[in-house]
Image (tube, rainbow, N blue to C red; front, side, top):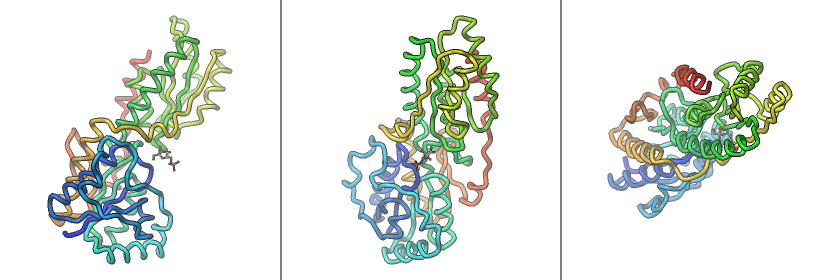
Length: 319
Ligand code: F6P
């Protein structure tokens, strides 16, 4: 293995830079050249690359985003675009690829594997929506960002005696909302995995008020509904002043948490190690604080198990 290409694709996630740094430094330590591919698969099609050196990844471990840039490339999924990417891989002398991203990124990794390019995937998405792994890079940083906002909104919510609906990201996955709900002491979480009942939510708000609760925090996953609509219905049914906030892209940025830096570093090194050992077509994941690797086809077939225990606990503790 002489040359390894590394790219980040899809929505950026805090911790991606830690993973890039580890790929570069672990690779160079093992006398492997690392070629950085800019803007995800788009950069492979356009041959937009940069030779990575030890110093090119200095001072990035603590930075959010990705120094390589990211994009979602439709062209890569089409046969002409994919052919161009393969030609460039050959031209650049790339013997193996490390791709960092989410579900869409891994579909691209599968394409590369099927075309005979040894590829290792590192899960990087704030959504935590890759069922084969317990956690993805960026998830815990995003959770911390959400909690910071929840605490600020709680102050004003309590001062005014309001209900506040806070919409968080996650696409079709409710993990950010669910874990922020438990860690942030929210009165309720609304997530795509569980059908919500607006009457029940309103009853809970009114029961809380009857017991002297001044305010309520509801965390809504973006895949489960619209914050404006839901808050208007709640205000109408309860008569309690209800406001909403959509946290948006603040959740994607910021300094990565210690956990995201650790797993990013460990997975970056592990990806290079696997390619060095001629192992390929694997995705990396985290289970019980350990990094593991799994066949890409099998990993992508794993179905998401809903964390009912955490959901039930969130409900119990928010009585
Ligand atoms: O996958 C990460 C994510 O931030 C989702 O939570 C969100 O739905 C989506 O990306 C937003 O995508 P874009 O950056 O294309 O607006």
